[in-house]
Amino acid sequence: MELKSTEFPKPKFSDRLTNNDILFGDPVSPIDRLKIVSPEVFEEIIAEWGNGFLIQTGKYTACKKCSGAGDMGRDVISIINESLGTWDNYQCKHYDHPLMPSDIWIEIGKLVYYTFMKEYTLPEAYYFVAPQGIGPALNNFFENPAKLKNEFLNQWDAKCKNEITTTKSITLDDKLKRYINRIDFKIFKGYDPNKLIEEHKKTSYYAARFGGGLIKKRQDPQPPPKKIGKDEMVYTRQLFEAYSDHKKKEIKNAKELQKHRDLEDHFIRQRESFYTADALRQFSRDNLPEEIDYFEELKGEVHTGVIDVHNGAYGDGYRRLLATVIQAKNIQITASPLENYIQQKDREGICHHLANDNKLIWVRK
Image 1 (cartoon, rainbow, N blue to C red):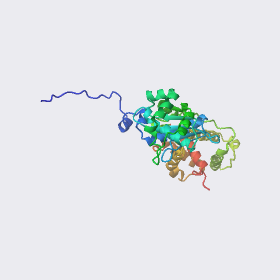
Image 2 (tube, one colour; image 1 turned 30 degrees about the horizontal axis):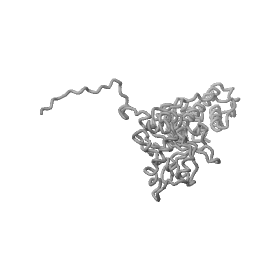
Image 3 (cartoon, rainbow, N blue to C red; image 1 turned 180 degrees about the vertical axis):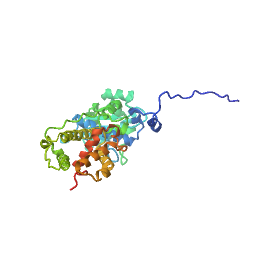
Image 4 (cartoon, helix red, strand yellow; image 1 turned 135 degrees about the vertical axis):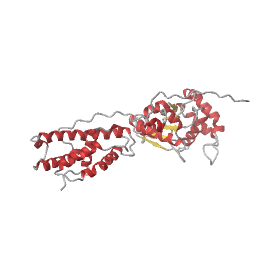
């Protein structure tokens, strides 16, 4: 048979491509990304959400990841009141389909057995968290707890008896059955993955997991207080030393600067820059994982970029300061996730944060 050539329509790209388009392709939506991560990473995301959002609501005092060997049917547990032994469980089920009843019998079985054996107490609530959500059949069970309990008892022999532990079979005897009947099956619920994502957005982990830029808005910096704060003592002392070195006359405080209008204006601007950089530090903490201090890393990058200029020969400490700050404003910042959020005042202010750490010294003694 002769194959006839067929013309297929060529794909069209109406939007102008950027370098990011070439490097990363079409962006993946957060809900789709949730579906393609590994089960291990999914559990980490739930733990991040627990620590970064749930605790902040005030409902819980602690969240911890228990999944793995010996978890006894618990993934992420959230403590309501440790002294009272109250807690909630968030069970992670990373499947390629919406959760079905057959997916959860063994999990309920583990909870029943291990609480029956007094390994731990029953939770106040037991949430099933799944990237594909809860299927209609299972959702119907959650809406009818009595029906859920009856079906669970019916499924015991097939789904739980020989699956809870490898060391023995767990027979549903009268004592265990009476225990199950005392449990309020209203504790079993599903958690909407879209709601999970919206709440994860409020954590400092979101951008690292899902991309799309830093979500939380950068707040305007606080205006410097009239009185110099404790965290300003070192860099402001260094400024006064630089001014004294420049004028060849001791200037000990802001009041004495009033006789030197140019330096007084400079001092005001430096304090404003210090607080602007401090706002960047808070912005970093709000948006990026706390395991790494990205503001400190940025300070290190600025220090590397200015130190050779700082170490040059100058007539006085004030000129050293000016040259160093100019260099800070000109260096390229390429290795920081804060790169697109840095203002010129941040660069100037970071120099004073470094002076606070005694990593930049304006007057050589």
